[in-house]
Length: 295
Ligand SMILES: [Zn+2]
Image (cartoon, rainbow, N blue to C red; front, top):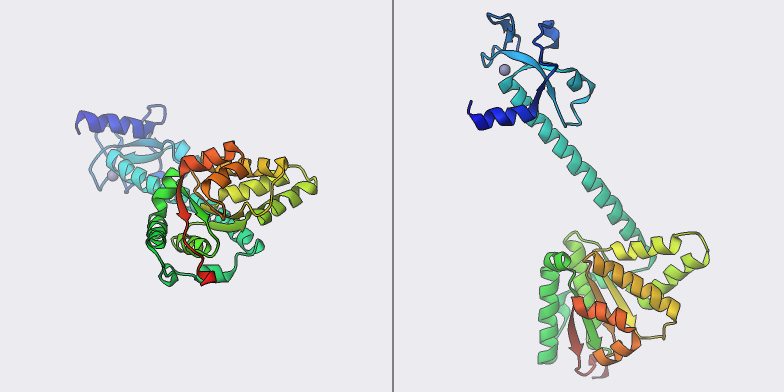
């Protein structure tokens, strides 16, 4: 065994009080021992001397581990790596359970705020661009959905702005649907509905409930805020909107905002602090062409 290996083993193994005790065979951690010249047991698998060993820092060590079992140094190493794997698997399960619970919460919210199944059925292939601008919008949105993992890493969102009937909702719905198919959570909600949901909690005067609601909307991997600018907002409502957008900004959660305003009008409608946050993280697509509904 070289120096490095010896050092590694020192970290892994802790002999109980440094004593070598003969113990009944039933307590031995490895293979049925014979005894060596100095009376310490010898592992028959590896022909190494055995000693009592505590496997530290492992949840599975438990009380039995703390008391120290008898291992040869090679058996102890094998046992250690088995237990490390077991611990890692356990941790993975816990993380997965937490992710799953969070996901359920958002899915419930999705049902509650009534995202139509219609939206989830829309596909990029069904969007027919009528001009170069529309083609570009389609290309950007398709790319955004396909590489959502990196958008989530950087908190990158989109501002879909401009004329009604130009496909902003169609494209955002396709993004939502693809993001969900990739295993992420997405919420699509109008500002009126969002504020209604938060304010109804708030008006019940139960402590913390409006914040809980904010955190739910804040927690989705993707949030699409629709119909921004349809009705004027009072200061209270602007406060909630800022809190939500800021919460998502700080946690690198992408937000897509949809409005019939152009960027100048949107800047005037939202307070500067809200608009600045959005502009820092969003790619702006202006839908300036004519509505297909009017044709
Ligand atoms: Zn052994």
